[in-house]
Image 1 (cartoon, rainbow, N blue to C red):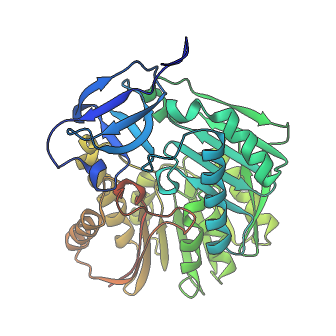
Image 2 (cartoon, rainbow, N blue to C red):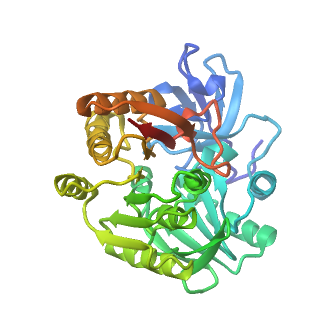
Image 3 (cartoon, rainbow, N blue to C red):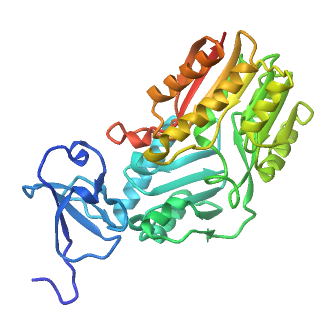
Length: 399
């Protein structure tokens, strides 16, 4: 008999049928997949998930305010969800990064579902950490996670970047600020021998696009002697890499004036202040203006923000991708190179390739694929959770 006030773990039973992705390795249970819930629970509580015959599937946290009602944390019926569970998960994530990441003090330490910690993102920027708890279930454990990160890593400080709009889908407020310590949120990191300033408080996502770190190395050889255009350049990482790899001239374009100020500082502190120029403007408009002016570039980089976060907006997103790629192809000479990216999960590799072919046909150009790249190794892809594969990066030669 339970003690007075003790609450049994609620049980979520799936509807009949074998098409539930959670039965085949996925970590999500949608509201529409739930047949019955027995027992009481509060939003964010850990619940047990069973199939329609009552067979154990896993344990995860529940929030019926979200379309994704349950996110699994474990499939081991013996594993209790508590402080030691999170210690083991965090330690495993850190050990993985120690094995696969080199030549940087900035990396993603925890990548949500791919590290079996859905809703949690932890990035390291030098001696500091940036933390996101994007779901109600993970928010409930935020203080425990921050304490464990202090024990495991001894950071100089932890900054909370919980201002991502996805939290609103979970009924959570948008907040940011210091979780541990107080420090200047403008920090310097090292990456492949280069130094970059990162604004942990005001930059996009958690301040810097760590997922492109390995893709920036693809500029080696391609940038040598080239006139380079870097669209959606943010704080100038691709631009600085292009200069480092021998570009004769680099123009970075972004709509965010604050990001461009950091881009200029990043170019200066790496010794490329005179080589890299930055211009504030809408990349769509700037590409049209460059074409009209008869400008030509030997290498163009397109790294736009996600044009869609939903399947419903996919058609419009593909039009946007096609527009910028078509314009870029028009200002490349025969044999010029295009590095083009999409960080929209809903734009699959197949759709991205089809869009590029359509753009090339419309301008009468041919594309030669040099290589197809993905996100950096500290953003691993869990094959049973295709949503963890989001970044496509194609290196193309345009004829």
